Length: 467
Ligand code: HEM
Ligand code: MTE
Image 1 (cartoon, rainbow, N blue to C red):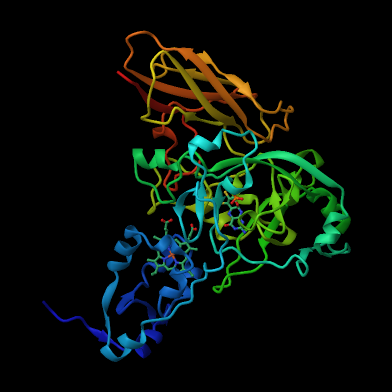
Image 2 (cartoon, rainbow, N blue to C red; image 1 turned 90 degrees about the horizontal axis):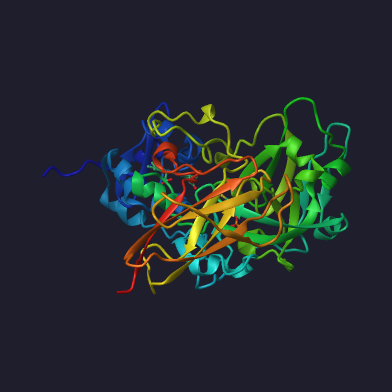
């Protein structure tokens, strides 16, 4: 076997621009990733932060890279190793940016520890109409900041000729307090079902990337009005940015159309309470955005800045993620600019009891689950089939009554049904119908997409009976 080519750290460092080529190191290995920079799913500018040096400090933060498919991509670009002297020096002591994350509830099913992503187990998800704070699903892209409520300030940029605001928590409490029940769902909810059909890139969420809380705070409308912002005739967007940026200078950000923000009926909140408590750290302490009826990604946590811009947020998570594509689009052909950012979500439902593959007593079966639709569309019906979709029964809806066009929260549902004698197995299927008569597609094939978002196919589960 040929011995690898050796490079000094100095040589690697001198390859940090498109003219010289872009090199990086991982451990003692050296890679020329010039060709990959424009293909990077996280964007070229992020990758460039590591140009000419080690990946470890960045990958410690973006732990999505600790996956075999990422390592395989990198391996294609290997050009050699660090020289022995530099090898020793390359063992970097990277401090753990996640060391200060809060302690979590042990019932949560963890899909990724760093950043922390976890969902309540199906056994608990629909036990309560309001999800208790400690088991509310958590979707973090970065470490959780530890913000001091006394020095916290929210910057709201005013229009030309208007007034910008720098609000303390006490200032925010002076606005009328508005409280609403809102279900939050991540665009990746139920992604694992898409993965089973065909591989996608993303965290493996089961059906628990959805939860419901009573949120209280100031209406965004009231705050924007005080700065002098008005509904404009031209297209505009309200951009939200998280307060502290990580060591790479990245802050989570997202935006919603100004028309939604300025519509008092849309009830967009700058929330400081969740189920009567200050927001837990994982859910955005001290202030987060709550955008009823809209995908979780726009509900920016640890909010630091609000501004009105002619274009959508330039954040990675607005422009290069959280978009839907045709099943025919793959990572070589995807053009993120060609698709709109996800805002309102489609109609959704899932079974939480019995669990898929569970063996139960024969006789009667109790099926339970949740149903929800985006954009304030109410769930008018949930249909359940015990025979794989041939015949259907209507489930009973529980939970708060929904308001027309402002149905922000889910309905829980259940069906109790006798099981035909002699049956050994049931294929239970559920589907919800919203008040625009949107229904869920039968299968995942027509809605499969490379990022595994917007899973809304009807849910199908197998249940067996004890002999
Ligand atoms: C996402 C590869 C360097 C930041 C990704 C993904 C791949 C990848 C394959 C998609 C992962 C998935 O969703 O499963 C690489 C390779 C790199 C590199 C091969 C080195 C040559 C970096 C650096 C940074 C970075 C240095 C940070 C400063 C990101 C971000 C995402 C990402 C922010 C999106 C994460 C998310 O969706 O939450 N990268 N990456 N990457 N990468 Fe990199
Ligand atoms: N806000 C910040 N600052 N950082 C994040 O990583 N994740 C978003 C959104 N707001 C995120 C964020 C995504 S993708 C979702 S689905 C929701 O927060 C999840 O909110 P939760 O963790 O309170 O359930």
